[in-house]
Image (cartoon, rainbow, N blue to C red; front, side):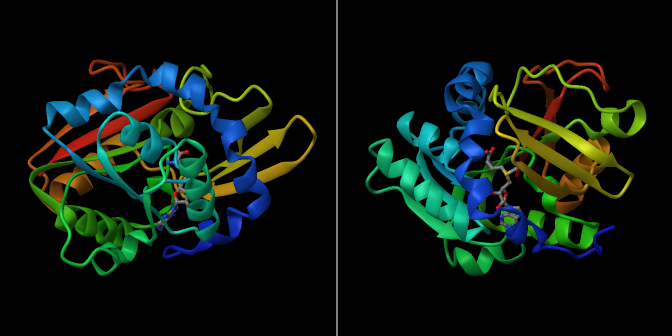
Length: 252
Ligand SMILES: C[S@@+](CC[C@H](N)C(=O)[O-])C[C@H]1O[C@@H](n2cnc3c(N)ncnc32)[C@H](O)[C@@H]1O
């Protein structure tokens, strides 16, 4: 089991080889189709123009939200991911896209004096944090960088299902590449080890912490967020165990 405060494990797991193949896992076109403009609607409904994407990864949301008219900064704690984002943004014609290497546990230092209308942390990224101390620190950083009335959007796999019923996937959302099989190799209450097997036989792993839906909602409320809305696979009404992914939208 990784130690409680293992905030840097992800850096060694996102190797250049894995990062180079992350987009094969996502499939940008299919992900865009499956989201159906959900995040753009949430941001527009909350009057957001400036957005900080703190888990930019290879840049999928930084790029797509920018192309949809939002003023987006991408950040990530993995230098490999930041480099890939820059490469992807340039390839997509966003010559001036801004990317910053930043850890969630030191967001206020990474963006001194800045405020955003919205902060997004997507793709099951937040579950790279182990333990409530780190989660609280990250959420306080997010809260501090938001304008009053701003919104934080954090998503995660449905760990309630994974922990209580075992793994299942409709393979309809988020990571839709056909050449990669993504599934947990081991599941415990503290740790999920995700295994990514590519069709050429190469295998990569990520270690994440299964957070339950109610627990994250509770932490968001404790941080000071006034209201937290939840969506299951992009729908506002859902059965606890049905969706593959949960999206939590927290208003400051
Ligand atoms: C599962 S990937 C998701 C990437 C992207 N949002 C997507 O949906 O494709 C998680 C991302 O979060 C970043 N990350 C994980 N822990 C972090 C931390 N403590 N601080 C900053 N970034 C972190 C990783 O480097 C990685 O790019």
